Image (tube, rainbow, N blue to C red):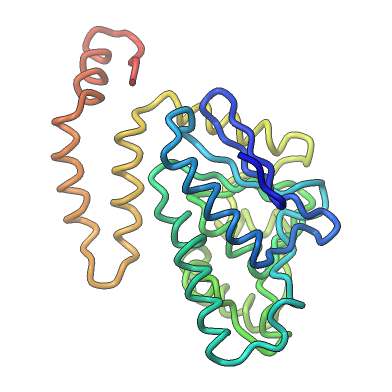
Amino acid sequence: MTFENLQVDIENRIATVRIDRPKKLNALNRETIEELHQAFKALLSDEDTAVVILTGSGEKAFVAGADISEFSDYSVKEGKDLAAKGQETVFDYISNFPKPVIAAVNGFALGGGLELAMSAHFRVASDNAKLGLPETSLGVIPGYGGTQRLPQLVGKGRAMEMIMTAGMIDATTAKDYGLVNHVTTIEELLPLAHKLAGKILNNSMVAISSAIAAVNDNYKDGVNGFDTEIENFGTSFGTDDFKEGTQAFLNKRKANFK
């Protein structure tokens, strides 16, 4: 896969998607958002990819925000279309992606960058990371799911404070808040993400995909996540992975999931 603003590498069933606009601190423009959609769409059908790591180029920034120069003169309708299309094609798409997505947050994750990291299934961060939603300082609000996902992750009060003050928090605070799972050095960030991806690969990807859907349904209005869990739990009994996993356990050997 070749892109103007992304690097995509696949090795040992792990795809690394790297946003590559270092001179712009990897800021999201329309082209990058479209390329992210195309990359994830391709990885969805790629049989050699089981886990995705999402990160930014360099050591300064994961994604420092959206490219403000592109929408500074937008109308109300254009603003709504910008948020709706972005959420549908990238942020919600990644959140509901059936393969695990780990965000490796290297440096600044601000505005759309933090929203992109929050759309991943979980996050690890370098110790120089700074995270925040500064949109209110520009006279706008987060438009790529930030007002919804941040309270889910850190709680309403902390999310309100971060959005209202437009301030940044460091990696240690983000871990204390539950916004990131692990903090490490910039040098060890991708090795840690790959180590976690390796642990995921030991398990049934079919079951993990079902679990992602069940967990996500807990956060959808009008959807009973418990019902999804019951349905997907029952469906698991009809899979080859269930047969292999239970037989491996009973025979005291490592499962060989296909």
